[in-house]
Length: 283
Ligand code: CAA
Ligand code: NAD
Image 1 (cartoon, helix red, strand yellow):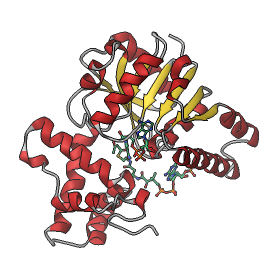
Image 2 (cartoon, rainbow, N blue to C red):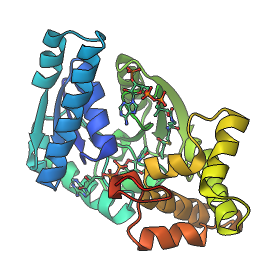
Image 3 (cartoon, rainbow, N blue to C red):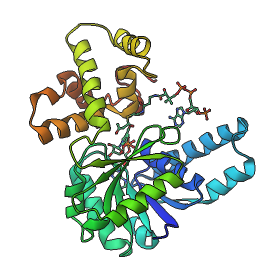
């Protein structure tokens, strides 16, 4: 199957990055968000990153213009009607994602593959709300998308080998490394990463150490590029909480209980970098 026209739903930090890497690989991409301001910010972010690449002589001005020429912004979901591959990157809430997939299923051409960038939610359940479950798959990019090499490819129970192969080859075309994963809560990446972040929050909550010191221990002691609390702010605390809830509900094991401090921060609207405040301040 030939993929020419791609659409990305949700232009937040992940959606904008995903659109950028597809456009850089020479595909035409429509970037969609409900919120026109977010959509504009997403495009501005892409332009800034490409301009920086030109400054660093990693890309020519002409290549930058070509990439930008591959991108189109739209607030209309109907624009999915001529797309071959659609990747959903909206908020980590099952009820929002299933509505988006039902709408896309009605709009997109019969041959189109519908992928989700979900961090943890069951792809099998998302696939089941569509009339094309064999063409639904998880395509889990890592943040920041233009930099990180990994894409977890999650097969729903219903996903066919053909759909998997198309997405695997597409991932390689993006110059990223695919890893095949079965559909279990948190997949591999967040089943391992998120309990570590949650435990880091517990160490602060229980007064074992300060935010800065916990991060220093993991940065200098374990050579992590970012401390876990800096990383939590970077991912988004709402997303971290949603993932912990999926692990907790999905496995029914108390070892995944979200730290009360994480819940409290999310209730306060302290979502990390994207809201200006989380474990650190970004004002
Ligand atoms: N978006 C795009 N590019 C970015 C970026 C961003 N937000 N932040 C940094 N970069 C780019 C820079 O432009 C730079 O690119 P060039 O080398 O081409 O110039 C490169 O990354 C390195 O940047 P810096 O030198 O400024 O900073 P750094 O060396 O400290 O690296 C980092 C920054 C790559 C983000 C690094 O801190 C890191 O790897 N952090 C951990 C990231 C991580 O763990 N991601 C996974 C999160 S979990 C996830 O994604 C799954 C989930 O479902 C929650
Ligand atoms: P974000 O909050 O930055 O962006 C989500 C965007 O979705 C918002 O701009 C919102 O306006 C938009 N949106 C909500 N409902 C919509 C709809 N019905 N139609 C179109 N747009 C809609 O979130 P994010 O960090 O980009 O995360 C998006 C998805 O990617 C989540 O499923 C998350 O779990 C996953 N993910 C996040 C990370 C991360 O580090 N943040 C990493 C990998 C995967």
